Amino acid sequence: MESHSPTLLKVENLSKKFLIKKTLLKKEYFKAVDRVSFCLDYNQVLGVVGESGSGKSTIGRLILKLISKDEGKIEFEGKDIYTLSRQEEKKFRKDTAVVFQDPRTSLNPRLKVRQILEEPLIIHGYPKEEREKIISSSIVEAGLDETFLERYPSELSGGQRQRVAIARSIVLSPKMIVADEPTSALDVSVQLQIINLIKKLKEEKGISFLFISHDLNVIGMLSDSIMVIYRGKIMEKGEAKSILKKPAHPYTKILLDSLPPEHPSQRKKIQNITEVYREEIEEGCVFYSRCPEATDQCRTEPPYKKIDNREVYCHFA
Image (cartoon, rainbow, N blue to C red; front, side, top):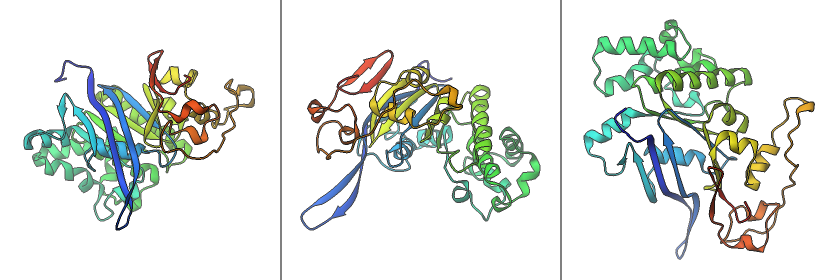
């Protein structure tokens, strides 16, 4: 590793808003990411979990510079990704990769699998002989054999297409992969195969993953650390085992309580929580309108409290 620091990615006060309505006198914005800060270490899986529209995918796209930030700082191996030289930018693109949710739209239907895997290698100037070796090893590492190289994406199942997407993400030997809901469009049995594949890549190749999902079961099976997001803001973050065993934020408790038990005899000990719906407030806790534990104090902005090696955004944690 090139860096003596265990931190591969460092994000500080990252914010992003989108224009949703514009009139002659006024502009209205949707705040997708609100002052988010976290770190991702080498050879670590950080699970980002939250319901649809919480800002998870926006965070992933901001980190990869697929969209531009409004505020905040993103450092990759100690360097601000917005002040990179041309050569450093090329290295950053080589060291990072993404696996999108739906491989039907992220894989070019006009290209064979071989061409899909070869494209990033051509862009980064790999010689032909080396490209062939990397393509062959990558498809095998993704759990497919070399006969799949001559097929088109339309000839593959959903799980096979996602394996091709993962093979494409590893051809340049990246240090970090953003996996954006890579299992949500797959059958349960195939989901487990993809989870095990990601575990294998982390252990054997030392790749760090920012794994985005709405499914806490998947996050819990895979992640070293967890970050719980609601309306663009971190509700709770810390060690995965600690959060799953004893959640501190009401929103995390609701997410865990929504999971079905594996067996009726193994029902969770977490108390059932009934969500409430009250009026929205412009300031204060963003979870106020749905929190079953909210009081008038929650009309003011909560601090981030450090509890047992985790941070919690709540007055009462």
